[in-house]
Length: 81
Image (cartoon, rainbow, N blue to C red):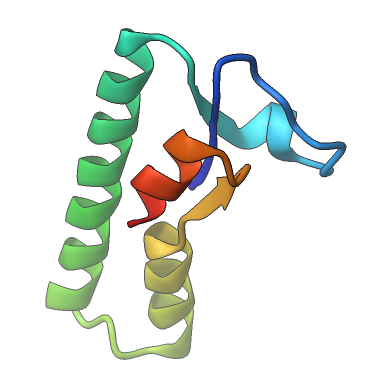
């Protein structure tokens, strides 16, 4: 999950951000982020509860729970905290 925050979307030239990020510019964007976080937590929990001990399951759980914040302005810092 990649989150890019700020008044104007800025990818800082980082490859993949524009295609994969959830930008936090509008109020509706926070609802999308909330839904994605919950969905990823539920998927990771389901994998863990159904034999998530294999290496492939652990990689998928790690992927689902990894969050990247692009930008270090006030919104990004608050979100990270």
